[in-house]
Length: 604
Image 1 (cartoon, rainbow, N blue to C red):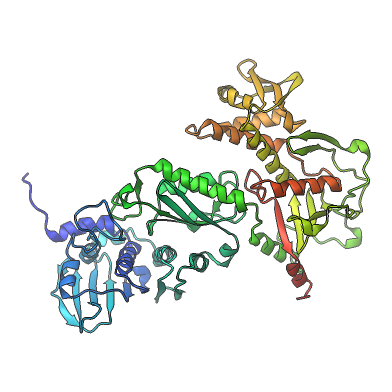
Image 2: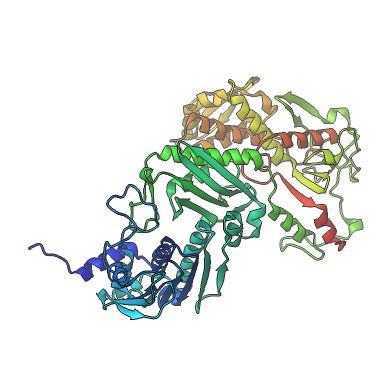
């Protein structure tokens, strides 16, 4: 079989298979062209989910007749000269317009700034008409109709009109976040009009347009630099999260990307702060020398390759963790909104039990004091107390207010002064401008974990020797996993030995945990180790184990605390970074402002 040159039309259709995967791909390429042309206003109109029509109108620099003639030919571009080492524009391949023209009906009308008249060119199924004069405003209008009419097989792989329209919306949102100085308008017969007015240099205002007003109230600013790589943007507080990753946006030199390394670094930065199955909200922008990143990995240009991926990942994880250390213990405002809804008269969740008359209802409150001296067993440990307390007595039913002890005035502290304990698990504290409700178990779990992590920086954690070793029966594979990590466990104060093929003996437990259920803790550790990423370092493994141990060594739900113990917990939370969430990412407290309370009672 002899070798022959493929026809130009077929070459363009093959290229289109990579560049133009769906209507959203075409919209992305055309919007990028408008941005590269210096547009400050871009209007996108669609019909049939982009299958019937995509029209992009911009007020950029425009093109003259000669430019239009070249623009629809392959590998013709104004954006690079001779090398790919210094790409500073969104487009550079010169493939988008000829690829679109090979599979659709493409019309481009444009007038260069300062020219008296415009020009128009059309490409239908790869066949180009001659350039002709046409009336036009300064800028460019690109109209794509009947996409994939020339390659009908591709139509079978498109989704519903609603899904395709949604994909185009997502493209516009990403572009709008990246370029807040541009006004974007998205309209059409298949959607309601969506407009994003320009916000200039106020990036957070543009993000609020896309991600919702709640993001502004729950965002932490990121600004870091490492070896000529800059990182900026905003990330949500740990308690502000979503059910999928659709609210995570990443940009490299202004280019929207969906890079696995960046998304992985984002997950790693929030590993101890966001619950499993939930996703943090973030907008990250990386500035890097174009020579140090390859944007030519794929024609779609959504993937990039960094010359030093470890540097970029370390910058992202370090910057986000530093920001969370600085401000991450703030409670999300969305928690307040949920509380407000729950408090409204007549509110009753679907799972709620039937309402009980107040006189007959069992009170959820328990006395805070006085308590018999033997009700509490305290063990002092590196900066705070681990409290070991019995279950609540059944003969107490009426709550008494916490006394206003000297030095515990609410205005002095961010989390206020404790006033009551509800259901032996929730501490109610009065602040200067509202109240705070704290989950005592979740909060103390974080404090224990941070203390263990801090101790790891110095030496092996102190342990307590069990008088009689505890023998724990486990599947043989769990025993193997535990013994393979015995050295790391020993650094945390947990000393174990093999005791036959299907058991381990626990000889020492971490002193700071006090009395713990060693069997339950070791079984949980075996489960956690089975889920470890074997590529993780020693430090990561130790922190993973510490998080599990902390859960077992924390103040349990159902344990009564004295006022001074509750206030000590609040003060330690204020001094501990990341105390706004527990090790599993659940919020440790919710704040309700006085103005919100007054609204509930119609006082404002």
